[in-house]
Length: 319
Image (tube, rainbow, N blue to C red; front, side, top):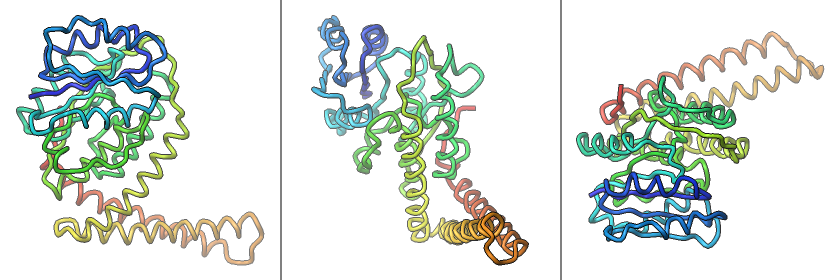
C-alpha cells in the first residue's frame, strides 16, 4: 500500500493538475494546505474525487512550514496498513513518471528511504533560481560530509519516499520546519543505514522551473545546516566508537577533530603574529598550522573512506 502526501502553499495555479495526475496511482492521499493566501484550498475542495475514499485534507490555520506540515501529515497515516509514503509538492514541478519510479524502485529493492537527485544532464527544465542552486551546492557538500556517503546529492529535493517500517521503528528528530527539512531526513536515515540495517537509495528525477522567485532565506538556512552538520559529526563519533564495525572510523574522527581544533588555534596564533605584531616566530607557527591541517584532513579522509565502504552495501544508486 502506498500513501501520497501533497504539501501546498499558494499553489492555486497547479494544485488541481498535481493531484489529478497522481491520486489514482495511490491507495491513500493526504493533502496539506499550509494556510495558503490564494485560492488553493478552494481548488482542493472543488476537486471531483468523490469515488476516492481514502482522501484526507489538512488545512493549517496558520503557516507552519513544510517540515512541520509533513510531520503532521505522517500522524494521519496508519503505519500498520501502508507500506510506503511518498511526499510531493503541489506546484507540479515533479513528473508523474518520476513519482511512479519511486514506487517501483522502493518495492523491487526493499528500500526504506529513497531520495531524488535533479542535478544531472536532463534534471532541470527551465531556470532554477540562482540562490537555490548555490544553496543546494553547499548543502550537498554538507550532506556528503555528514553521512560519509559521497554519492548522495541534492539534499533539498522535495520528492522522496520513506517506508512505514522506518517510521515505525525510529522517531524522526525535530526537523527544520521550513525549506531545509529534506536535508535532515537524508542525514538521519543515512546514518542509521549501517547500525540499524536500513537501506537507502537515490534516483534521478526531472524538476520543472517556471517564472518563479525564490523566497528562500539562504544564509539563515545554510547557517542552520552548518550547525546541524557539526552537531551530527560530534554525535557520530560517540555512536561509531560504540559500534564495532566503525570503532576505527570513530577514533580517527576524534583524532581528526582534535587536530582540526589545534589547526584553528595555530592559525589564530599565526595571524596574530603576522598581522598584529605578537612576538613569536612566524615560521614556527606557520609550520605547526600546516602540519595540523594536513593531519586533520588525512584522518578525516581515512575515516570517511572506512564508513563509505561499509555504507555502500545498504545503498542503492541509479546510474
